[in-house]
Image (tube, rainbow, N blue to C red):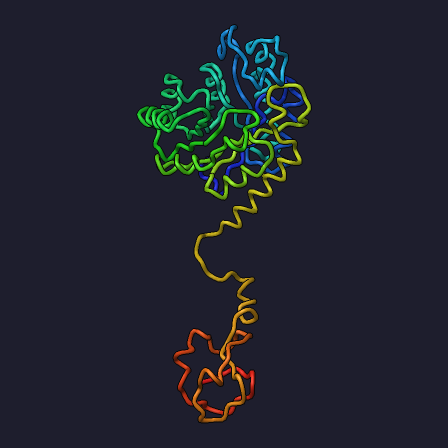
Length: 338
């Protein structure tokens, strides 16, 4: 099960960046696998069931696609057939990467279930879709819930619907998200991810629409268990999401950086690491003779000093040593013994 992976689940979001071309879609699977992502995610929908013919485009879509084309007409070009879904799943199996897709309408969810998906990804736009939330919660499958455009109250309402439909909270992962492509840094509000975790006691992650990779990496350092990031074969391709997506080399760099952060986070126990333990005698200090000391002479602030190396008596024992008789002669700079 995806939710039990012992490291950050990295979802390479292909989305609609295949531009309706089967070969491009398959190459996106290859690129995600090569980058080391855990999953590659597409979007499953029928335009006629997703949008009305008069639905407007978002501003970013107007900037990146034909402004004279409706959202409905645009989305028609990005529909994936069942046959292509099967090809993508087969390619994912060959490449050792998990296939995921977001269903945007009931028929598309039926298709994904028939194809054997074992994790439900709910996009931000469906956060307030009560009938679909009820259905998804009743499936008994782990849910990853994106929360772009949402208030804390709306997230709470969605979680409540999923729970009342039979899904245990431990099987829900909530992704903080800002639905703008690309997201301005000033609107990321990454601390909201922590607020979601504290408010609802759920696993959290981050669906990243910023340019670059640093915010996703920061999210992992702050406790994200899932990272979702759009990627493309070429940011200059036509289409609504390419400009806010990573190219393959950038995706690979993000994955590598996240894996390094996971190692760096450690277990939270403050103790010397194996490599720094070797440096302790070199960097720390000991009690040494500040001048020649004869046997029987009392140790005092005048004849003791604190210097490297740290292989002798710790200076933290200063008060214990002061006033005691020297057990033997000591030369200047010699480590003190008791």
